[in-house]
Image 1: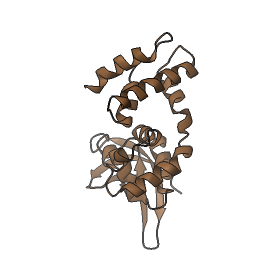
Image 2: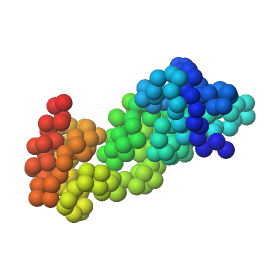
Image 3: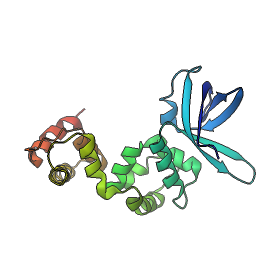
Image 4: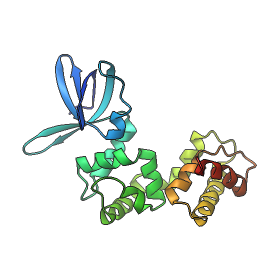
Length: 203
């Protein structure tokens, strides 16, 4: 019904914001991480929104990007995760961090979200693995890094570097995040990527 709101950020509350659109104030629930990236009160903002209709209330949930909104919709499609739970996950993990956690089967990282226990985290990973197209995750990272070499080679090299970091005792999500930061050249091997990634692990 309401795809987005564009208006003035009128106020910040504990778990929601008030957006003034043509003299009408809309209360929009947001994740803590998204609220932290908002401009100052009085600035113009655009929020992509999801309208949740219940028997006794209609609630708007807002997101700074369409990607955030898309991931939120996938989250609330998981049995046991409602809108507030979805916001909780996105407060603890960015969409990319969530993709990495699901790709790495990192239950612990997802359990960092408030109200998400081990069983729910395992269910989330199982149900979102295909929906998030995680089989293409490495290719997407390669494209974002403007890698000159072939994607297949890049993905293989990166994957080997991640596996090596995990073997050294690092968490899967942490390893994926560090390897993502490495600019991989065409002639680089997994050992080269590993050495560079280790520098990011200590930051």
